[in-house]
Amino acid sequence: MQKHHISAVIISILMLAACVVAGVTFLEHRKVEPIVRGPGVTEIVKLSKWYPGLEGTAADTDVYIFKGEAPGGSMLVLGGTHPNEPSGFLSAVLLIENATMASGTLYVIPRANNSGFSHNDPQEGAPTGYHFTLSDGSTRFFRYGSRATNPIHQWPDPDVYVHAASGQTLSGNETRNLNRGYPGRTDGTLTEKACYGITQMILAEKIGLSVDLHEASPEYPVINAIVAHERAMPVASQVVLGLEFSDITIGLEPSPKNLRGLTHRELGDATDTLAVLMETANPSQGRLRGRTDEALALEGKDLYYIKAQQLGRLYVPFDEKGHSIEERVGRHLSALIEFAFAMSSEYPDQPIEINGIPAYDELQQAGLGAYLRPLQ
Image (cartoon, rainbow, N blue to C red; front, top):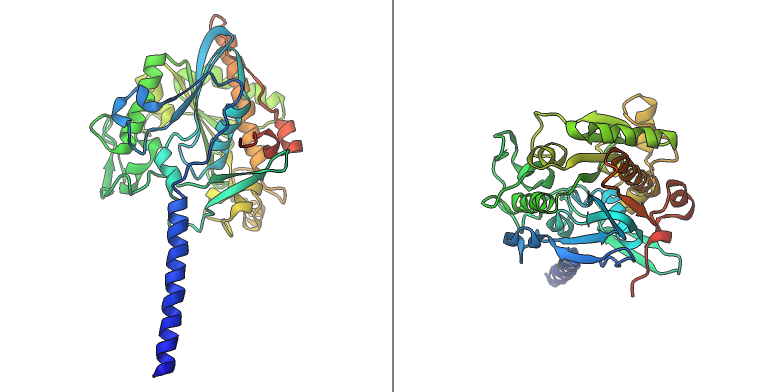
């Protein structure tokens, strides 16, 4: 009997230790890693400036503003709409830490769904975060978040989510998906209020172009592509040509009019902005993947996807090189440069000129960490 008591005590201690470790990890996920203010940032404000109803909530988030040396047009870049899609968030971070504006105004929201960074998706085996080694040998760490708003901040999910503006119905958990809630509303969920704040910012600042940065699984039909509202098609077509001339293959898809709540549809309908969304290929988003760890998120290599490519099951080429974070961020940043050029060509009286962004080839050669600034 005494041996049984000792075993029970040991098991209890081990369980308590596991709970402590899990609890610490859970609470650590709520910490926000700093983003270093780069030379081009002229102002940092909260989204609640445009919708005060967000103030003090988990949905309020930083907006980085770059005022150019000369006047011109304006562009909004949304990163972190889905915080488990690293290339969108990291592209926004590299903009904040490196970009300068020669003309026009750039708005960057790196954590569009701020709440989504405070947890990650259950039963997905996702890493807590990922690391980069900088040029000075120091390390930066960023959270691997969730596709959706933290249920601690918005609960419960309905059985069926009804998009308020259109009446379209979706699965209940889509109520916490930022990219299903536009144009948002003041009397809705926290997620819808965040959408409303972004919409109000676009309206108030008369932002000419809005680009929402995403990732998708290699088996997803719309991959390595731009999805554009019909009014944005002329500019998006120029961007596709510019990227193709740089040997960056990319597709162009029209925004479906019957798919509601997404940036490329609702922001284009509710405001005068030219609304587009971009997707890069990331195997850590897919259902065919193997182990979902930090290496998969950053290196984008997966044996199962190589096999799926050989079987003709994918919509993007996939071999032993995979799709690294440098490739994916490089695609996004190259497209943003092309968007600025296309906007300046289409609207010459409203130029947008962005400098200081690493080129696609530079990212592949030096690595993403070379363009992150050391923490002070």
